[in-house]
Amino acid sequence: MTTAAGDHWRAQLEGWAIPREILDQAEASPWHLPPGCFALSANPPTPTTTDRCLQVLDGGTVLDVGIGGGRASLHLGASTVIGVDARPAMLDRAVEEASRTGAHLMPVLGEWPDVADQAPHADVVVCSHVAYNVQQIEAFLTALHEHATRRVVLEVDASHPMTRTRPAWRTFWGIDRPIGPSWEDLAQVLRDLGIKPLS
Image 1: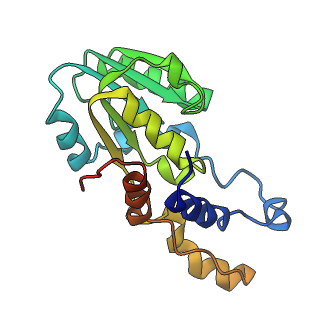
Image 2: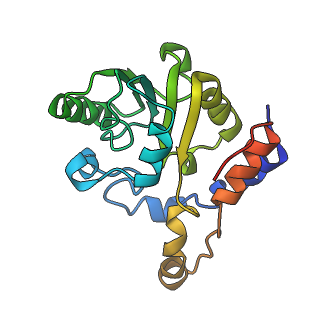
Image 3: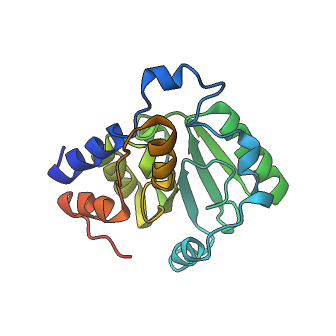
């Protein structure tokens, strides 16, 4: 299913594409951080996300989509954390962090929602700082919603994290970058899908 809000979301994300002549000069991908940046010691959990999860979780199961280093899930005391990530190195980081914290982790390698059928349903589905990387946002959100038996906790910045670099793009490359998407755009996609978001 596609929506008008989803089309607007995709158009804004497409505006962040880096021109090939600039990308060819890069020494490394500007879109991927090293797995070490996601160590739990350097990424404490967000209190609001933690609170929203624990309101409905009492030792149950958590599905963490885009688990990274596990900052959104491994500290919740869940009986099992199902961790999904598309990058093998990131999933290895999650396994390492789980062994350190004593959390029981079931790793699932692949892109969400392509691997949704490999992930069990969970009491809480948490997805932290992933949405701004997702073009096909309707299918992504729908699969999150369908996998949660109690709640989906979706954490995003107020706006696309690259918006703060807009002045630099204008100064160094003469390129105007988008001002979105934003959390309001994401909320509208949810409403168009018939899902009522709670802030």
